[in-house]
Length: 111
Image 1: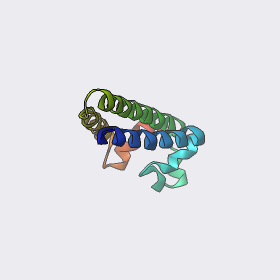
Image 2: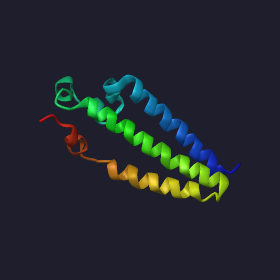
Image 3: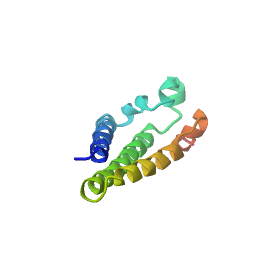
Image 4: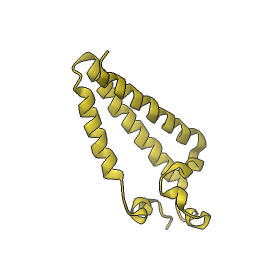
């Protein structure tokens, strides 16, 4: 068994746990979102927390699939599939990271 397969499997387990927390708790799980948990209760009411929770669940599923392909490719084909999976995940992850708190949550703002 190679290290790439093991690392991908660790990420799969981690993201599956996070996905299950968001699936079970629903919109209550938004307190786990960095930056959103620092907002006051009045500010949180201005955002669609149900949609936010669904989007984070969807992100976790996408990340799980990326690492699943990396793990299977690493196990059956070549160890470098795990590196490719990690690079793809990193690109997608960094695309969604915002340093500005308002920009990070503006698409969830209720109209």
